[in-house]
Each structure stands twice: as structure tokens, then as C-alpha cells.
Image (cartoon, rainbow, N blue to C red):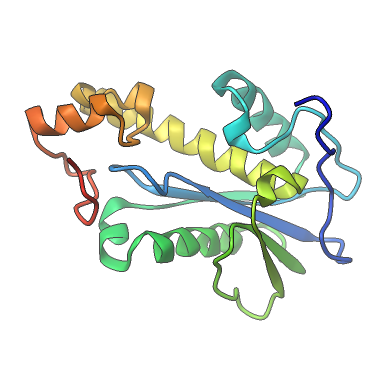
Length: 196
């Protein structure tokens, strides 16, 4: 892991480039959460990486670093009912658009983790597969989306402790699926998913 390439600061030549990523696409319950982050051109952080490569502790330490140093950042939630209505891909893109809407400055260019996105107004964009392990702003967005979603799932866990959302964050673990069998579904479950 130590010989990995350092993350790049920019994909485009635009100064105010926004990175976007989401968390919670594969979960059986709860919202999909997206973040949009514009970092200063000179931002560096050796520890920043794709949130899936980081421990929960590392992500929690990075979150305030990102939030305090970003030129602009925002996080947006699309709940399980909207996911069921418009499907998870559209919900993920909608969450990213809503996060960009909330930024205190308008991005000049948008880079998005993955290979699917819908144009946001007239701002040029680029999708980048595994972008969260290549570009700082997407990695930062992945950390914010994941930590904000995890925090929200802890609140839901307090409401419905049987499902162990404090541990599995509503991903389809064996424990989660067995709890659905035993206790049924909650108002937060995504009915369009194969829950069992």
C-alpha cells in the first residue's frame, strides 16, 4: 500500500474543480448520501484515500480536516422512499446534484467517481472509474459521504437496534438479513431491493 501513487489535485485546468462521490448504494435500508467538495489548489493530505481503504477511525479523523480546509463542501441525502421511486442510480446522481446545489461557490468543473452521471446545469464534468483512489477531491467527497451516512445510521440504529446498523450500516450482511427474517422490515428499508 505504501508505494501507491499520490492522489492528484486536479483533473481539469479549472481552478474550482468539484469532486463528487456517494455512499450507501448497496445498502438494504437508509438513504444514499453524496458529498461535493471543492479543495484549495494547494491542498495536500497524505492520509486521504478512497474511504473504503480507510478504517472508521481514520475516516473520522479526516472528516474535520476536509471540512475545515475545503473551499466549499456539502452533503446531501436521498431517502429510501425516493430510492424506491426513482431507482438507486438516479437517486445517487440526484444526491450528488443536491450536494452541488448546496455548495457556497459554483464549481467550474465536476469530477465524479464511477461511470454514470447526468449533466449538472451547464458545468462540464468527467466521470472517473475508481476516481476516489486517484483524485483528492473525490477521495474527500467519499470520506464525507461515508462518515455523514454512518453517523445517520447510528441514529437509526438507536430506533431499531435489532438490525445492528451500528455495525453493518444496513449493508446486506448475514446478521441484517436474519434480522429482517425475524423482525420484518422497518420504514427505512428499501422495498425495491431483495431484502432477504
